[in-house]
Amino acid sequence: MKLEKLPEEFVQAKPVLEKIIEHGFEAYFVGGSVRDILLGREIHDVDIATSAYPEEIKDIFPYTIDVGIEHGTVLVLAGKSEAEHYEITTFRTESKYTDYRRPDHVDFVRDLREDLKRRDFTVNAFACDVNGQIIDLFDGLTDLKERRLTAVGSALERFNEDALRIMRAMRFAATLDFQIENKTFLAMCESAHLLEKISVERIFIEFDKLLLGQDWRNGLTLLLKSGAYKYLPDLQDSALEKVLTDLSVDFHFQNSEQAWAALLTRFSNIDVKTFLRKWKVSNEFAKFVADLVSAYELDSWDLMSLYHFGLEKVLLVDELKVAYGLKINREQAVTINNQLQIHDKSEIVIAGKDLMEEFSLEPGPELGKILKIIEEKIVKNELKNEQAAIFAEVKKML
Ligand code: ATP
Ligand code: MG
Image (cartoon, rainbow, N blue to C red):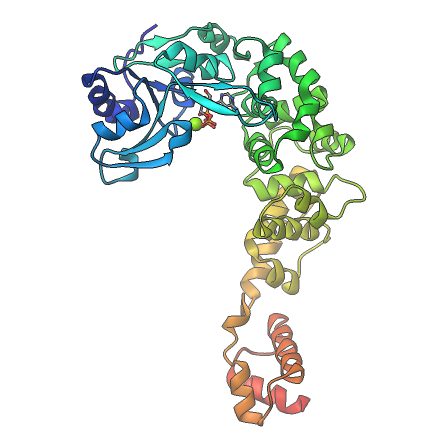
C-alpha cells in the first residue's frame, strides 16, 4: 500500500531521510506517526529508523545530540526550530529481558525486519519510506481496518519480555478506540501479574494516557476484565466499576488531575496522599488531586473555599459533580469568585513589615496570627483591602 500524499510532517523530514539514503543506508518513518497517518489522526512526533549506526548518523549530520545513544537514538538538528529536530534510531533488536522490564542489551542490526519484529503491536510496526510506501510485515493493515490490537509474534512471549506492553495495550485501546485481539488479550490476562515488576512511574504514564483517551471506558473496562488492576498500587475494582457506572457516558476528563480525582472520589477508606505516594507522582500533582478530592466533598462554595482552592480547581470539581449526576448551581463559583477582593495573600496591600513599623511589633507568632486574621477578614469581605481600614482593624486587636 502507498500513501496518496505524504503528510506535511513527513514532507518536512524527508530531506533528512534522503541524506541518510544518499550515504548508502536505509531510513524510514516508523512507530505511532505512521499508524496515526493511516488512521487519519493528527501526529505528534515523527520517529525515524535507520540501518546506519549512531556513529554513522553523527558523521552524516553536522549538528547532532546524543539523546539515547545506548539505545541507538541520536537527535539530528536539521534546523533551528524544534520541529526540525528528529530522533533517529538505529534498527535494533532487544535481547533477554531477565527482569521483565528492560532489555539486557540492544543489538544494532542492518535489517528493517528485525527492528519491526521487536515492536509491540502490529499497528505500531509499520514502516513508511520516503515515497509513502507502507511496509507492513505483520498484517497490521488488516488489524488497523478492523480496529484491533494484535501483538507482534507470540503475545505471551512479548508480554513476558516487557509487561509494560500490557498497559500499553489498554492505553491504545482507550486512545484509538481499538479492541484487543483474542489471543493477545488472553496473554495479557495470563501475564498481568508481571506488572508488579514494572516501575510504577512507567505504569502511571500509560494509565494516565488511558484515562485521557477518547475511549477511556474501553481502557478501564479492559483493566478490570484482564485483572491487571490487581497488580497496580491500591486500585479497588469496586471503585473502578463505580466510575464506569456513575459517570455520565459521554464525559471526558479535562486533565490528568481531574481524572485521578474522579477515581478517588469512588474509593472507600482511602487516604488520598498515601495512595498518590504509592503511585510516585510529583508533590505538585498530588496536591492538585488531593485538593480536587477535598473540594468535591463540599456541598457548596463560599468565599473561603474559592480563595483556598482557586477558580480553576473549583470549576474542574463542578464539572466532575455534574458528570457524576449531582445537582449544582453552575454559576455560583464564578459569582463568588468575582466577589473576592484578593485571590492570593500577596495581594493584601500591607505586609508584615508595615504592621511592624506602624505598631512597633516584633516578628513572631503574634504577628503571624494578626496577618492570618486580616487575610481571613478580607477574604470574607468583612474588611476592605485598604491600608487605613487594615490599620484600624489591627489597632482594635492590639
Ligand atoms: P504515541 O502516539 O503515544 O507516541 P507511539 O506508538 O508512538 O504512541 P511510543 O511510546 O512513542 O508510542 O513508541 C514509539 C514506537 O516504539 C511504538 O509505536 C512501538 O513501535 C515501539 N515501542 C514503544 N514502546 C514499546 C515497548 N514497550 N515494546 C515494544 N515496542 C515499543
Ligand atoms: Mg510516539
